[in-house]
Amino acid sequence: GFAGDFLELSHTAPTYAAVLSVATIATEEAYDLVDRPALYSWLLEMKDEELKAFHVQKDGEVDTRGLYTVLAVASITNMLTPELIEGVAEFVGLCQTGEGGVGGEPGNEAHGGYAFCALAALHILNRFDTIDLDAFTHWIVSRQMRAEGGFQGRTNKLVDSCYSFWQGAIPALLHLIPGYDATNLINFDPNDIDSVEVELNSGPYEIVNVGQDIFYDENGSLLSDQLRLQQYILVCCQFIEGGLRDKPSKHRDQYHTCYSLSGLSVSQHYGLMKGLPNEYFPLVWGDKKNLLERTDPVYNVEVVKLKKTMEYFRQDKFASNHNELVGQFQNRK
Image 1: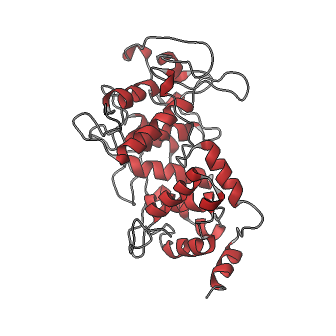
Image 2 (image 1 turned 120 degrees about the horizontal axis):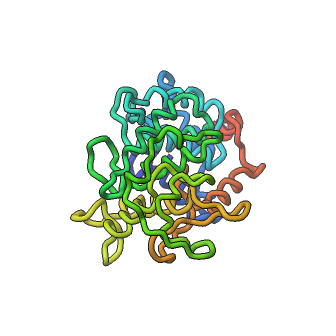
């Protein structure tokens, strides 16, 4: 595994960040930094045999964050073995709360970051039978604040731009579940929401303000107000000197810059108007220069680079089953 700094313990979060960084660099030199047999052996060591989820580090906590980061790393590097994923989806189900969201551990309060980790993990596993998706949907649609347009992380908390991704990506993940349609769960009256001026321009990358009528477009739109979220990010959270912040009055930092932009990309590229077959029109508030590259909402990596990375690690020269990976690591001793 990877650590956050020199002389620190390996941890699933820095390991996740390191592998995503490798995928973003997307060169063979970067890919070769990942010692797959050693990494797989460490991921197995992090698995809690009783809970079937993962410690974030040696003797560390077991939660949905650790679970998601392990699955993301293993799936990108082609090491998602049956031995690694056994019982994982069931642990996610134990973490769903009475509110409908998901907490870090069984009995914890529902929280945006952990909720994202839970649903993204279920996407990686292609298992959606261990949580109540309808209850989950009711919870997430209540997390976007009407006044600000941004998302809160928990009930009765303030808006925070980092949840533009942690919460804002969840409607995209729901939209991508095969056969799941949650639009009938929401009591939606367009008269309850202030209208947004409509301005349609021809051609992709030039759709600006499409208005609330896109909310339930027959081609499928996200269960969130994508334009209002973009407005919050671009108008309220940008620093003139560069970078983004949690909210007005706060200072800019790298973390909020990263996840504000991550949420902005998802809000522009998913659940939107479709054009010709296999084409779609991104939804962009303001100038078309605001359009970002399309990222994958499960992994938060640019789609093209994620595909390239996954294809690289799926070459025949790389071991991908449990016995081969363990054997390669043990043979070094």
